[in-house]
Image 1 (cartoon, rainbow, N blue to C red):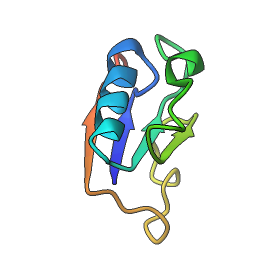
Image 2: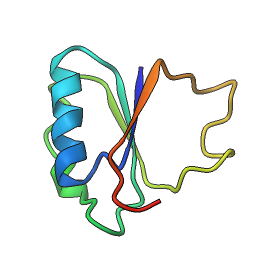
Image 3: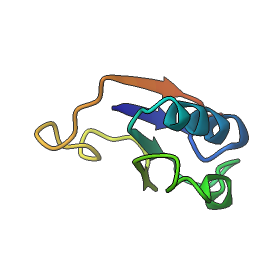
Length: 79
């Protein structure tokens, strides 16, 4: 299970597609305010399990008991 910050931008969305093609379960975290566009993530359903959350990363965004990730990648242009 992989967390991708900034996964709705051009580079991040292509990375998400690559990881889904490789069989990973992906969660995308993107505020969709700078380069992130929901349209960049269209058509991901047939590739594999992908969840999109439109939020900034905060401690409360992912409660520890509910979400655990095996890795994360950061593709956000701004913090």
